[in-house]
Length: 304
Image (cartoon, rainbow, N blue to C red):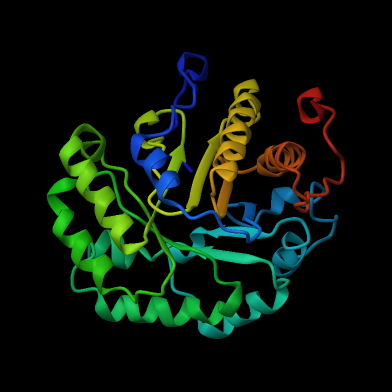
């Protein structure tokens, strides 16, 4: 993920902002559920040849990457759908390789979001929905990512599009235009729309765009896209802070968490995800599966 990339990492203030007032209000309104929270941590893609010898055994063929990936993680942020709509038979095969508790989180195709820009996209949306529903019960939250130039002046397009989706379809929205975060009125309006429709507001933690770290929850679900910097020391401190915040949210009634680890080249995503999951398991008394690195790093930060 290149979004928010910076050259001078040490100049960035990585302090995790306090919860937005709307998040605090959401938690006050929640009826505490006795159900066990659903926690998913994963990466952005499984097709990484440079993970051979890291989490994939030596000699693993590309066609077996997913089969190996699902033994390490319980979810995947499926960015590949942004570039193409895969055949239903392919999706069904992928689903068959994953255990029942695994979740695929496909991104809406760029034809819908960046070419048609949410307008006159009914046929493309129907095709997308039909395809991703082939994941069956292993379909997690699908997500819409809007570009840097899709600002508040396009509010009505977002409103119309979201209202046109099936009411029972689980969807999240990522906003990237700086104008959403500069205009409090429009920021509140889009928040209220998402809350009304049950659309999860994606939080992105990346170095060069701290404004998208808005800390606003619109549903009892957090969908977090975390972008590290090649195992820079700040990567670990940021994860530590996130684990503490997630623990607070779980105590306040958070029902579902998706936390997806990105790196700008994804090479070191397994190491950082291992650190995240181990810390989360310990702090929140969870039992999430941990990626089994073939040569576990000796970085002392991994064993705090």
